[in-house]
Amino acid sequence: MKHKKTKRFQWWVGLLLVLMMLVLPTLIQKGQLFEGADDQATREIESHHPDFVPWIKPLLTPASPEIESLLFSVQAAIGTGIISYIFGYWHGRKYEKN
Amino acid sequence: MKEKLYLVGIVSLLLWFVPQQVYGMHIMEGYLAPVWCISWVIVCVPFLRHGYKEINKMVQDEIEVKMFLAMAGAYVFVLSALKLPSVTGSCSHPTGTSLGTILFGPSVMSILSLLVLIFQALLLAHGGITTLGANTFSMGIVGPIVTYLTFKLVCKSGGSSKLGVFLGTMLGSVMTYVVAALQLALAWPDATNGFLGAFEKYLGIFALTQIPIAVSEAVLTVLILEAMLPHMSTTFLSKTGFLKGGFKSDEA
Image (cartoon, rainbow over all chains, first blue to last red; front, side):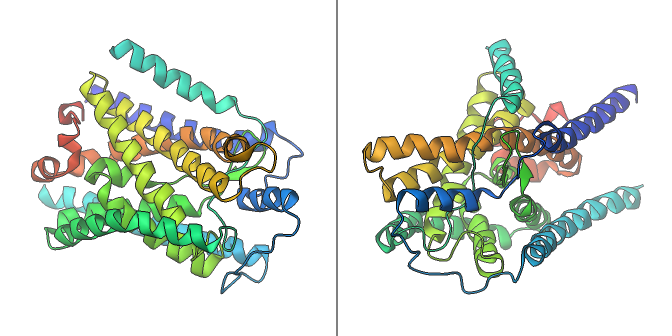
């Protein structure tokens, strides 16, 4: 039982570590724009090849950065929903067995 | 050997602090000439065929396998949607492909990644339909292969499975973007320094930002696998690439 408790504790510490690793950059690099990398990459290409025009454009583009954030959130939410459902199923199954 | 591996693991964690200004994501629509778009699609085809056959088998298998497959897909789905800040001052995406790779091997990840990429290209204008071949190759094929090989190597060298997952995820994630840099350098060789010069530049641009993201992703994947482990039946464990890859189930 004690073994399980330390494992759980370690797990939560691990999760805290992950969250810190995700939040810290915003604190360390104050003033940085944290732009999306694809924007920066396209800028890099365009700076070296000023005559370049993308030969095709995406069919659908989000109307604004906020809409883009919404769509990313929806994507993350769908995935999280599936993961949570499955974990919930397993959790419930544990009690059913007992 | 085990100690050396742990040292590598710790150094990898410290790499989180290292990088400076850079970027890393999928190749955008229209930024790869048609000849490259088609070439990368052709390269992907054999892997996708194999992946499709594997997934077909799994979908006809028991519900437990399907659940883990759904988990693997959902994990890629979630992580690809997250733009995570990096110590370099910019953002990048984790790949999320390592969970599925460690469970099932790299073959099915090509299909799962393709599906996620299609979704993002169509609805979010992120990545592209023309660049699907290139992006699938980097994220769905090379990344998972690197992850799986690293995982197997670490486990067979006596390292713990957790370490295998950690290093495999990290390397796979970084390699995904190394390949992306390679693809861009091939398509846009530098005027003065040619392919190598461009590769070096895009490597800096793409792969360096990815390193701290890869570390975070690696820790997260270890955590989620640990959480999933008690729910795997022995039949599942024996069927999948997990045990074959050398995962020691007694470590649960």
